[in-house]
Each structure stands twice: as C-alpha cells, then as structure tokens.
Length: 412
Image (cartoon, rainbow, N blue to C red; front, side, top):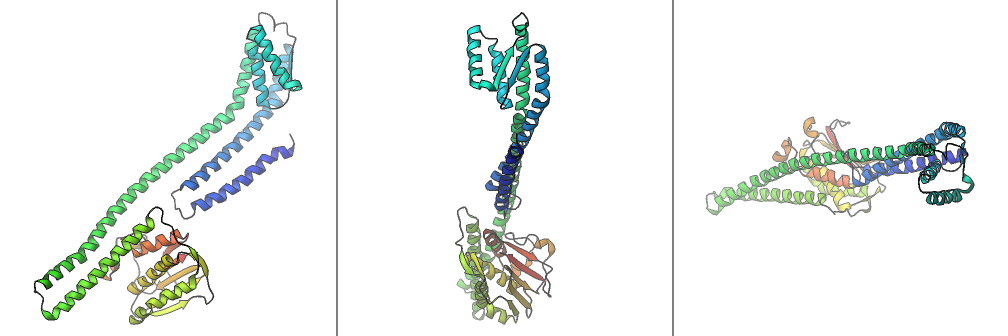
C-alpha cells in the first residue's frame, strides 16, 4: 500500500470533519444549552466519523499484525505439517475464503470438491493451497481440519473486533445523548410549567387590579355616590386603567404569538439607522416634557440590515419607552448605533443585580417600577424574543460608562 493510499482516507476525513464542525456551529447558534434537532444530527454524524476513523486505523493495525506476525508464524507451523497456503488481496476476504475451504473439507467428498473448486477458480492466482501432509488424509486429518477452522475463526473474530467495538461505542454514544436530551426536555418542561403558572398568576393579578378599580368607580358613578367635582377624576381613572388593561392584553397576545409554532418574521433589507431616527422622533415630545436630554450617535449613511421592520421597531420603541419611564427626570438618554450594536442608555435609578438576571423573563419578580410607573413586565421579554428570532441578542449592562447607570444593547 502506497503512502498516498494510506493518507487518502485521513484527508477525506479531515475535510468532512471541518464541514460537519461548521454545520454544528451554525445549528447551535442562538440555541443556548439545549441542542436542537439539526445540531443533534451533526453531533451524531461527527461521532460516527470518529468511530469510522478508529475502525479504519484499528483495521490497518490488525492487517499489519496479520501480515507481519501471525501469518508468517502460522505459515511456519503449516509448513511443518506440509500444508502450504499462499494468498493475496483483502485480509478479511482471504480469511473467510480459507474458513469456507476448510469447512468444506468436513462435508461429503463430492460437495467438498465442488465448493473448493469454486473458491480456487474464483480467486485464481490469489489463492493457492498445496497440502502434502501425510496426516491430512489419515485419522488425524479431521482434527487438523477442525484445528485450522478454529484458527481461522479466531482470526475472523479478531478482524471483526473493531467493527463490533465501534458499533457498541456508537450505541453507547447515542444512548447517552438520548438520555441527556430526555432529561433536558423533562427539566425544560418543568421550568416551562413553573413559568406558565407564574405568568398566569401575574396576569390574573395585573388584570384584576384595574378591573376592581373600574368596577368600583363605575358603580359609584352609576349610583350617584360621587360628588360632581370628582366625577371627572373618576372617569379619568377608569380610562387610565382601561388603557393599562388594553396594553397588557396587547403585549400578552404579542408574546404568545411570537412563541407560537409556525410564526415567521417578514425579513427584508432595511435601514437600521433610519428606523432608530423614526422611533426617537415619535417619542421626542415626551422626552421634552420630562426635560430629558437626548444624545444621538447615529450614522448619517444607511446601515442596511435584513430584518422584520415592524418587529424590530417594537424592540427599539420598547427600549426608548423604558428609558422614558425609568430614566431620571432632567437626565440624559443615549441612543447609539455603532458597528451593528444598538445602545439605549440612561442615568436613572440603578437596577438591582439580582433582578437584572431575570429582567428579560415575563413578569419578572422584583420589578417595582412595573406597578408604580405603569409597566407591564412583558415588554423586555418580547423585545428579547424578537432579537433572538433575528439571530442577535439583547443584553443589559448595569455598569455602563460615560455616567450612565444602565444600558440596553442589541447585538444584531
């Protein structure tokens, strides 16, 4: 075997390995620690390649052991018994042919000659057997044949050992991975159930509070229990609570829709810089009312990005509204687009580090501002989900520089 023939499988294996590794990275991107179906497929193919390489190397080592050690030793023993066997070609095929040849020796005379003739004719010069041993046709002939059959059975079993070991190894890999995935799925399901129950509990609380106010104020107005000068205040409160319920239901519907199976973003090339400027312009007057200084660092030239313009606009609007609600009155708000990173920072009240770890979860606990300033606790969860669906990520930096107390960054 030439060096080229030896190296060729390794070259093919290396190319396939690189391709599969790239596919695995692409499949795992944005999936977190849970492995999706595509990533699992490439993982199993990658392990299959490793096992095939191990089988190939083991097979070559066994072949070398046979050619350099076992066959010469066996030849010396057989030469002593005046049994000469010469062959060429694949070791595995040669062993099977020899095994069949000597098994045929135990069959009736006519059947044995017919099988042996077929084997020698099929192999031609690749298989030559010359038996001149006086023991071979004597009373010890059957024992000699059985001994040769056992020898070649051992050699055949040893040749098959890498394939059997490889199959068992791959079975163990698949079994372990399947068990891991089942355990992860079970854990994921339990987490989902806990979050769902918490979500339903918070929804009930956030809807019940304004409904109670609306019912109470409406009944008081209907029964004429409110003084005339306070009636407008009651009506304003009813209207405000109704808007809050509408906002909550709208955001809840959006959150469920984004997580539903089959929902696909309508992605098209669009100018990210222009989208930022448009959303800032919509809320500009509200920032002015709170005397908040808007600092814009947005390129004049277009920054093209393939996105769902409506959904990405919701993300930016949510971050700006967040800065408006929880920023310091008379403070500063930074809106920056730099190297495909959108930053919205403010110098308002700092966020508790423990709460910051869960800030993108729906109705995250500890968000005191959600009840005092009118937030729903769903906006950042929706924003994070939309960014993930675009292949990016939304992060909170509680140690922002330039005098800001917090900064939300979108890595597109």
